[in-house]
Image 1: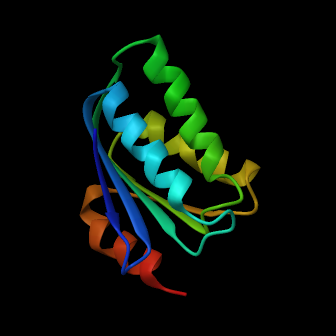
Image 2: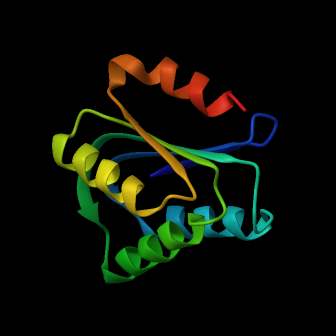
Length: 119
C-alpha cells in the first residue's frame, strides 16, 4: 500500500495493489492524526488488486484508520474494478451520511479526482 497526501488539493490518496502492510497503515494513521477533527479533505482509494492483509495487526490498524475517517473526511472516492469491493464501499457509503461516497472504475479515475477537488 502506498500513501500520498496532496495537502494543496486536500486529498489523501492510498493505493492498494496486493497485500496491505502494517507500515503503510501506520503512515496513514500518522497523517490522519495531523488533520483537524472536522477536516476539509477528501480520500481517494485506488485499488487495482487486493489480496488481503499482512497480519492480524494490519487488519486492526485498517479498521482503526477506516473508523477514523468517519466525521472527518468530506468525500471518499474508490477507484477499482473489483466488483465485491465496489459493492461493499457503496453500501458503506449509505451507512455514513456525514461523508459523500462515490465508486468509480479505472476508466473513470480522472472523473473521480475532479469530483474530489470540487467544493
